Length: 78
Image (cartoon, rainbow, N blue to C red; front, side, top):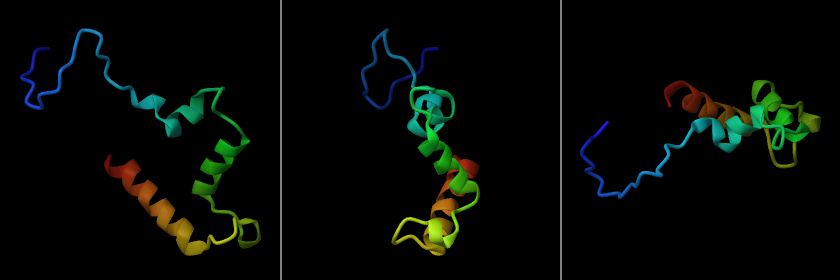
């Protein structure tokens, strides 16, 4: 496909489009070298934030709500 390059970015024949499955968030779901108990906890906390006594110091219910709202927007609209 030959499209006009309005951005003035120079690409050569070795240019390869970025595959989003390789970003660190998606990659931690499938790549055994990245996946760990910490990444599993990260995703589990997204679904259900930890109870108050298990939350890291300084994080409250509103912090998790804000984090989850930003993830929701990203998941829904991007």
